[in-house]
Image 1 (tube, rainbow, N blue to C red):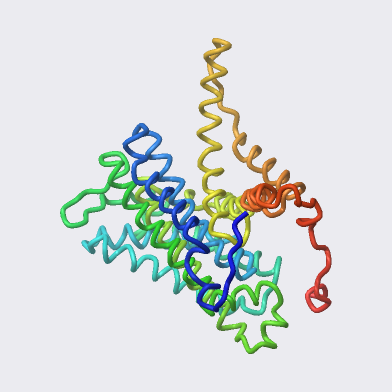
Image 2: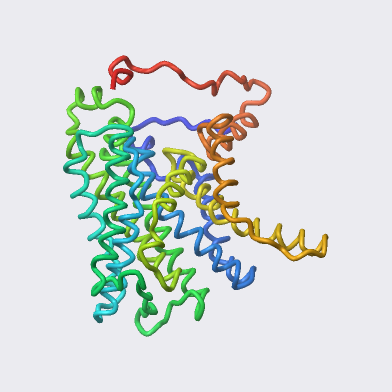
Length: 365
């Protein structure tokens, strides 16, 4: 068992808890760098999709996992980032400028949504954000001269200093581009958690009354959370447009918003790891079902039949199983397994028993 003695505040907020943790993250990054040379182009594309989902998951995680504000409308910010990036590039704006501008527009929209929604809590905030997603989907169809309406748009090929990044033409280069964005977003997320702003997010999540009593401005903290969350989600939306190639209003439907929320719940709320674990689940379910259909077809000799709604049904079953048996998600289960081996034979089952007691001020909300 590794014991970390913290003797200063700087030790409590450092990027890595100890050298061994930094080493394993370096190994993970090295594995991600050599992945394109170890697998086929098809799996490289799947890994790219997982990274894009992870970026979107981290965007929603800051809002829901860190600040406790539930959103069912993050597809609206995905759509804004996707369309803004594509439209700007089609107007001749270079990708290195269009990409952050698209994210900035998503963040500004998030602030605009946060201002009237600051007094809402729980299901009411979720319904308000859901209405925002429906409104943006309709606006895409109405603004046909700009967005292409029902026909949609095709994302231009990314060009950076003469180097092309395309999912099909240059999948390895596109994978590395998405990997760089994912690493930068992860580092930014981690540093936010280390900063006073991250502590303010956690305080608002745990108890708004207590946070306000300590001097935290609730309205400003929530608005900043919306802005950061929607900006990161806009980055994911811009990359998703290039990953999909062609897109329209149906690409960013309500089902996608719910799937994004369920992804971070299954992965583990309140942690960066949870966003990645949830993205892996979302990315591997369709791939696993495709492999399973091919295997059954080879064994039985019958032609494979795609069952409509099978992926959603399996994902829903996984969600129900985690809510019933592991509310902390995949990352929570990993923490329990790691703690078991670290404390063996002194591990006790009651160490992770669910807490059912709440602050009286929070129960009445």
